[in-house]
Length: 420
Image 1 (cartoon, rainbow, N blue to C red):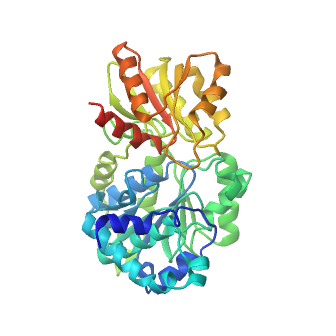
Image 2 (cartoon, helix red, strand yellow):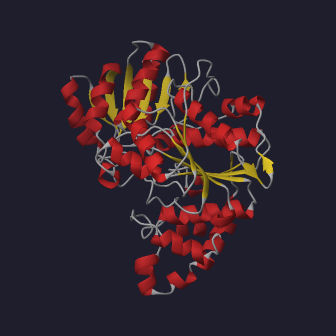
Image 3 (tube, rainbow, N blue to C red):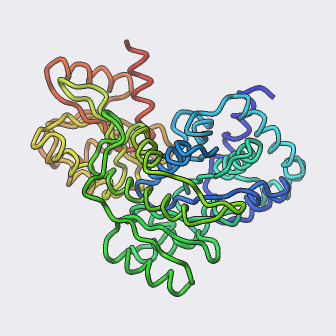
């Protein structure tokens, strides 16, 4: 199988859909003889901060000498971007081998019209299966799975987990998860296997209280993270936002809880050096990602009101009252009026783009919505147009902030590289 064929098998028009339920992924894993059954799964769920927290947990374990497979979503740079082995991108050969195994197992589904109708897995479900195949082939000590948008019905809700880690919970994807923080919290917690320990990051009182009640009712041991005064940032450029302190605390607490476990008769061995080295080496793009200085060019994938609130606090801490030209695009199902109501205080003006996603709000519609702030607003028809405007503005000494949908970030970076 060629790499392009493997990509097409995972991502195509038929698989590019969202369907609730676990029937398809569980059926698929059954055909594969349940690769997840032998894996020590650490689930990372929540609304915001999942990717950063999963990356930090992975890096700490790797720094301590463990072999770790990680799945993070969304896959922004192509389907192989879902996966990491020991924090590093996988090879095309690893991907192709895993897809070949999945395709062979799915042959009964592919050959039956009726089975294809009911049991054909979606892109994300296929991606989860590929990851589990890969991590079993690699004989990983731990598998870190970042949930998609859900909890109970998320495609990553497979196998018997050894730990569930819950990051910041906020109102998002309410059409799928519930209309209140209590409902969303319970939906996220529901991914925990029976008897599994749960680590919860710093959250609002209503989320924490709901978690405490839910864990007591369902007999789960709950461990609450707290931010230490001496929290350190990962590195000088990436993941330096103030909001990363919450994710650092969550990752540290998760590893501390894991250290109380016994695996194959031995306790997990993680010292302070591994803890600090793992966090300092963490790097996930587009999370308050300062790409250039004098003037600043910052990328931040703030894609819901809670993200934007955290971004605004980080801007205040990072650059005071400095204002930016904001290049932005958003998905139509987000509460974008609330997002930009907060963000507009930092705006010199807005340049609107359409993210490359079928749920995107057209740039013109976003532009119309932003006119009420009485600041310069314009539409960039293409990502190349957006990049040209960024370069023009920075030549004039204007700092630029690129924020909104994560899906637009790699598209802008790719356009930048084309126009050098």
